[in-house]
Amino acid sequence: MEKSKVTLKIKRFNPEVDKTPHWENYAIEVEPTDRILDGLNYIKWYQDGTLSFRRSCAHGICGSDAMRINGRNRLACKVLFKEMGATISVEPIAGLPVLKDLIVDMELFMEHYRAVLPYLINDDPPPPTERYQSPADRARFDDTTKCILCACCTTSCPSFWAKEDYLGPAAIVQAHRFIFDSRDQAADKRLEILSDSDGVWRCRTIFNCTDACPRNIEVTRAIGEVKQEMLFRKM
Amino acid sequence: MIGESIVRQAAARKSYRGNLFELYAWFFMRVSGVILGIIVLAHLMYQHFGTPGVAGIKWDTIVGRWTDPQMGTAWRIFDLILLIFAFTHGSNGVRYVLEDYVPDRAWRTLLKTLLFLVYLILLLAGSYIIFSFKTAI
Image (cartoon, each protein chain N blue to C red):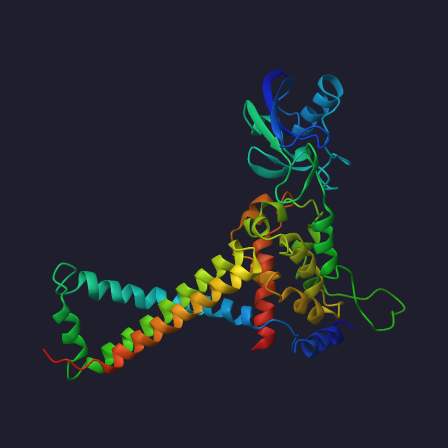
């Protein structure tokens, strides 16, 4: 396949030297079917070894290489050069502290994730076999099981940018996954946590999260279902 | 097994504790949004497109409606509903903006208090005028 020249415009930040981040351009040759991640690897391996970014599986399932590419949050391993044009801007995801170049501190994100009790809670004695669930009950929360915690949604959310205490779409998606699980017994507890003004009520239905999700989860719908569930339990 | 879990879910559906103000504010915004969609459109139609039309509207037009022997009370009630829903819906929207964009707690509390006072005074003044208005032309 024929190679073409593209420019990767990358937002660099080295905390030991820089006061503020700055843009740097890298000219590389790529095949149209190369991924942005291939371009970043090429730069790191052959042009500038100081470029820092996270990547692990490189197949869109670990969620490490979330970054803002051409102004939109995506996984660098799921975007091809042919989809992006000749000049491509790459920045760290917004709203979390930048540690270096494209690497952000995910601790706040993980703290919000842990806050919604993202694990099965069931005090009944374990049955001799599995805890059975009908296909219909399983389908109820199928969409939100697809989350890989890449933070694309939360860091695309203006409400989260405005107030970092907001739990954020990713945490609510994880709560949704257990609130609507028929095997789980702690929905009330999670709804109580999410009923805080920094819980679901900080969501203004902007839909950036749904646009950003690389797993195509209908994030805003999931948040809406949680709000609805709160209402139904109170009516 | 499955039947059991559904029964347990229904039992667990009773309630959760937590902040209810935001829940009801959210629900009010949805309901009032639908109602406003209808009554604001009606208001727009009779105020701007009906007779006498936007250019012909004068003090007398409104006074004439409010003091009409048959329809006067209905007009006043309609305008009161419009006032309450539009003003509450809008003020709560401003409150959302303050919640989102004023990070300092003291400032936020101050501005929200001011907003509430302005809301209350104007709502009471508006309602008072709607009910107490007596001038005949």
